[in-house]
Amino acid sequence: MPRQQPDPRVLRSRAAVLDAAAARFVAQGYAATSMEDVAAGAGVAKRTVFNVFGDKETLFRQVVARSIEVAEALAAALDEELSSYDDVAELPALARRMARAVLTGPAVPTRRMLIAEADRFPELVAEYRRRAPERMLGAIARLLARLAATGTLIVSDADVAAEHFAYLVMGADLDRGMFGAPPPSVRRVEQRATAGAEAFLRAYRPQAG
Amino acid sequence: MPRQQPDPRVLRSRAAVLDAAAARFVAQGYAATSMEDVAAGAGVAKRTVFNVFGDKETLFRQVVARSIEVAEALAAALDEELSSYDDVAELPALARRMARAVLTGPAVPTRRMLIAEADRFPELVAEYRRRAPERMLGAIARLLARLAATGTLIVSDADVAAEHFAYLVMGADLDRGMFGAPPPSVRRVEQRATAGAEAFLRAYRPQAG
DNA sequence: GTACTAATGCACCGATGAGTGCAAGAGTGG
DNA sequence: CCACTCTTGCACTCATCGGTGCATTAGTAC
Image 1 (cartoon, rainbow over the protein chains, first blue to last red):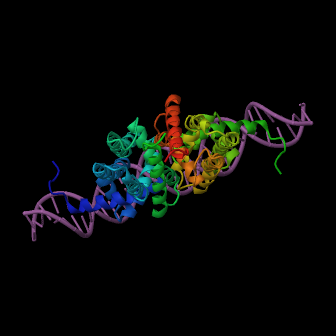
Image 2: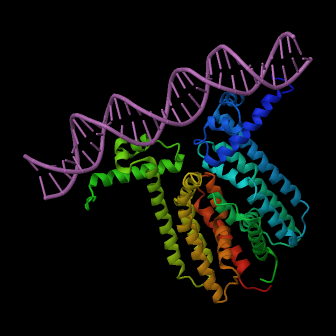
């Protein structure tokens, strides 16, 4: 039975190693990151890394688990927030908020890391997709379905409409970010998001035609 | 001065090694691919690989160079084809063709490989983006600008409109493909492309409103 | 202070993989 | 047939890296 009050030394080591490992895995990928370098970056002995995490694969999985939690929390927060929207005029503002959160946060680097290791850790990728992007698309779909029910939008397939919204708003910058392009400015992200949301409204608002 | 009529043995080796290396780099990434495995896959001695390509990095660069050429040829073919379009009613068919070409061909695996190695070979990524996706977006932008000039579309910023078209048509499947999801069926790709093109037309066609 | 536990340093093992040297054999061009 | 070049196999070097064992030191809890 492990202790109930964990040793503070272990906590410190865990946190330092997780941070250092995350930075390196994101920047260089799994294979190109050495445990010695992680230890050095964490200011800890290599032996300690193995004491605490066992082996490299376990360390990587824990790094990914933490990243997934962060991404899921973001999706959950947006989901929560979306439940209060009831006016299509708010969609551009929502688009800007979403785009800022996704494109200027850790989401893009996390995605790059997972894409790079998709062959080695397919289950991790599947779990990420389920808990972050798919959850977010689901939340958007529910919002759009609700707005459609009030007649302010015309939506035949809410899932497709949610994809259209998301990729109009963030598609281009997300794609650029995947290739390691320097993060776009908040100003640019918001402009693109606004233009995308307006195009979405033109396509989905009931209007003559 | 090298020979003018290259030895057929070298040509054979080159081709076999390039094919085997491409398959492995795409599937496992740069670091996880060993030269011995490439040689075995090419049915060639490890020594021959080094004789012909010098070192691993050079081999990788040549593999990427070939992939870029393929992608560029696709973009160029679409660019050529687009110059004959002059009716917005053709956009859904164009969307389906583009989506099929991009999503069911080698483009997605190539992108994944480049994303995975973006930190090790940033210039290769930049060159790919310039010659393939940006070229394709440019072609779409020119097409949309032309259609706008005839009054059949309302386009304020052709580059943004081109992004909207591309990501409405292919965004969702492209993104899924990045994560190593199994390639979507042609049927699904075409449905998504059609729905995307129709949404685009609703957003950009002049209409009451 | 005492008993416990974790961290450290360091030497070490085993595996893997990039790249080389070389001599012998096979393919190529004339 | 001849001269030349490429391929092959093999043994080898060297570096890196994941992971371990262990004895010593330092931090923690009471």
